[in-house]
Picture 1 (cartoon, rainbow, N blue to C red):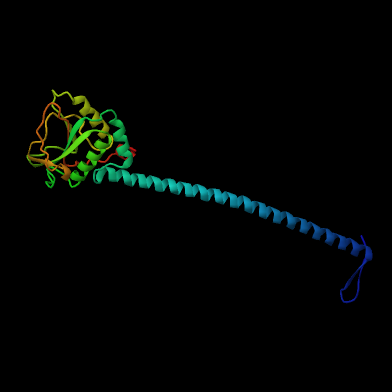
Picture 2 (picture 1 turned 45 degrees about the vertical axis):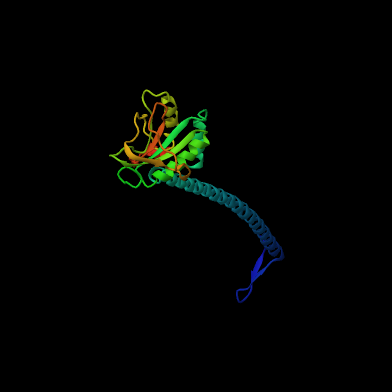
Length: 241
């Protein structure tokens, strides 16, 4: 070890060799600290980028989940409106009905709105639904006409009901129309065999104001639109697309 002397007053005088050794040690310490600083800086930048990428991925996943949740909420709201709101057909429903009725071009069918204005036998949406159903049937090429039946006795129809004479030749066609409508709107599962009993039958559309319903015969296929029956809500109903 290099020599060192202590002078009066406590001042330490280092030998030249010891001072050189101590200076070298300090320089190496500075170099090491600089290297450690550079490495630390590189690590901070690198880990910061990794963290930023991870946060971006988390944000993207959160945004995607939020969008999916929003879509599910909208779908649920629309489904609840379909179940409990006014009856009608969305464009996609109309397309499906028209497709299901392919091949029935020219077939005659009558749409009856039963006793509008009477809360016991009809619903507020019955007439708009009658017009919409007429348009849909005509889009399928069917010869469709609409009628309003009033002064009816009792509950003559609930939801949407197909009817034709049991001995008629068109029960298969009535069944096809029922099968086309039932996935899209509450429809009676069976085809009825009689028209609603009402005293007055007048055309639904103004352009048919001079027409008269001639009564039911073996060629009659009718769709009766009656009071809407609110269903009991189930999970299966909400899951239905």
